[in-house]
Length: 424
Ligand code: GUN
Ligand code: ZN
Image 1 (cartoon, rainbow, N blue to C red):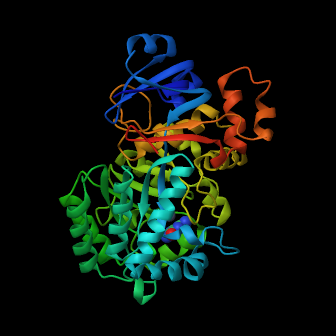
Image 2 (image 1 turned 60 degrees about the horizontal axis):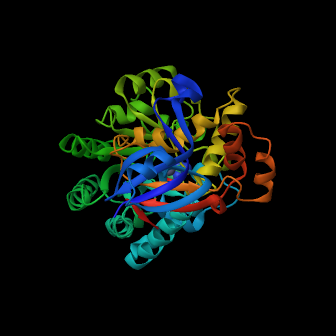
Image 3 (image 1 turned 180 degrees about the vertical axis):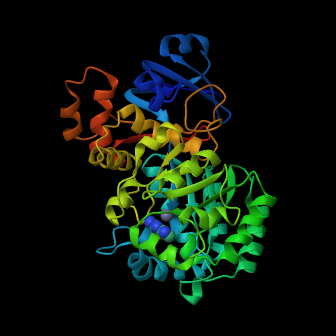
């Protein structure tokens, strides 16, 4: 039986970084027909009601029906250490992150946190995510099992580290290759799940480990590969010491076969001109994590890169300070303001939906509302608190009505979430 959802419908027919707000399509009295996990029809409510008289109608009134949010870079194992005080990247990893990730040696703990993380993500309207696990293979199993039981389209991989981390978190070049391959064969393409080859970052991998994962990637060219790039200046100086033969940070990956289309680089803040050129030529994706970049004190991402590259948006939980993609859009707005650029609400919303889907090479399936797309939808109350409601009273277009929710909204704004055509 088909479902017909009524509300204001927001979708994209082009890229607002090229075409401005006209890239978005807003149907003030719209409808979305969902059947067997997919979107089958979109248009004015009156028309779709006539066209699909048998469908079960759910009327969301003035609420906004959007594609579900896509969080393109998260560490689900860091769920419990979100909002840890006072440290910058390397100290934050050593003091908070690595001890917490050690606990994932216990598969029961991994299962508990995977479920907690996914419940929080869904409560915030996030219907897809690309996550790091820990070095423990069972942490990947826990995440994929929890995502599968919720019907989510999700990406994850075993984080690989063979140096500069506690012994209990280190694998080797060989075991990273073997375990990643085993997990890839077990999970990649099962239901809506995809395996991502995941070297944590150059400081915690030997060149041999990076090379082993580069070799694995060449065996599975349709997989994505995720890692971190140029997040903090201290980190970049450390990479220079560890890889004296490399031209720059990106070169430490490129030299081992870890740069091409399908590569996802988290942060990518302090890039040289050469790195930007090579990233663009290679067709790599950059993942902007603005709450993390301010929380850990990393720096200000250059959003003009979105004009020429695939850029996704992400919470980077728990280096990021929120589970909410609304907060993350607000932080992206503020970071861009500090660089003299005012991102339009159509661009912010795009980054959290189509932009992240494009970064993950999944924009033919998720991130937008159009016939044939998978039915992952988030319904947003645009007056979820008194503070937001009063700020929208004088709105005379959809963007003025949406922007207060971007800046002030949280999980209270999430009215309903549909995953794979089913109401959560
Ligand atoms: N760089 C390497 N690992 C991490 C991590 O877990 N979080 C962040 N923010 N940066 C990293
Ligand atoms: Zn990260």
